[in-house]
Image: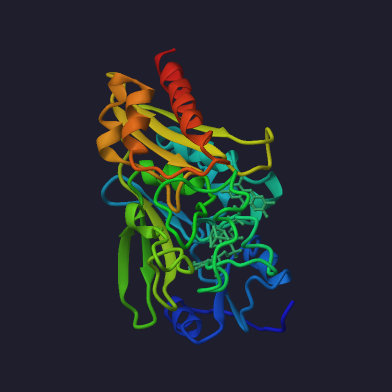
Length: 315
Ligand SMILES: Cc1cc2nc3c(=O)[nH]c(=O)nc-3n(C[C@H](O)[C@H](O)[C@H](O)COP(=O)(O)OP(=O)(O)OC[C@H]3O[C@@H](n4cnc5c(N)ncnc54)[C@H](O)[C@@H]3O)c2cc1C
Ligand code: SF4
């Protein structure tokens, strides 16, 4: 691991200003960042620990939704009584991820910013545009079973690997931030993770030093909530394909897919086809997909996972 300096931030704007300096990064639970530092995929020279900033509460908003502090742990968020009652797709997605110990440390902001699990990204001997811009992409033409098939580019075919964000996309959440100038903004989850295009090194639309302070959920939308995660092992594994869905009694609803794209993949024109069945939804949602020979199985898998959710919603 490369040497680095460390500070504990005392206020949000000061933290953002410190993080805007070259080589600086925020540290939350450390479950992703420290792993990447140990193998020198990430090499920050200065860490700004944000755990004393007080963003550890879940509060009601004036609009009837919930504001989740950036430092709320995955465990506390999944267990919150209001989340379990009104947003259970979120609880289901979180508990489908990682392990109990990891969820005790992992923060809401850190989870949104976890980096891809493409095996070549982790191997510093291999070409990877995301790790080292302009170096190439070993996954294209390489082993791509876990990788993406839509929203990808000729520079990178990795996926965003997380579960929680897929549920937040279905719930129309937005991410609240403060920048080094003290400006605040709310970024819809739909726009938060970037499609790779020519710049796969940029995972999100966050600017230099921009600190996530909270994630806000709009008021509850009712319906039955599901998170179906298909993976190689029954637990402690990332999604090959996941489906987050909220289905209403009349068969309409919302659907987003995980494990297939650089961001939680939700196509509103596709979910409008829910009453026609899973095949109609996925045909529209994955129009223009460019699967590799290794990951083409994800297309029928997505249809079957959604069909399972629709069947459960009718039970
Ligand atoms: C073995 C293993 C299995 C896992 N399995 C799953 C799984 O199945 N599903 C899943 O979804 N996840 C899984 N994870 C990922 C885990 O959920 C993430 O590591 C965790 O959520 C990251 O949160 P953290 O607080 O530890 O982030 P950190 O590691 O502290 O930070 C991650 C990134 O976020 C940045 N950051 C942190 N806080 C802020 C902030 N407030 N504002 C701006 N930037 C910030 C940091 O600079 C860093 O770049 C797994 C992890 C491991 C190690
Ligand atoms: S798919 Fe993306 S993360 Fe994986 S090797 Fe290619 S550029 Fe790197």
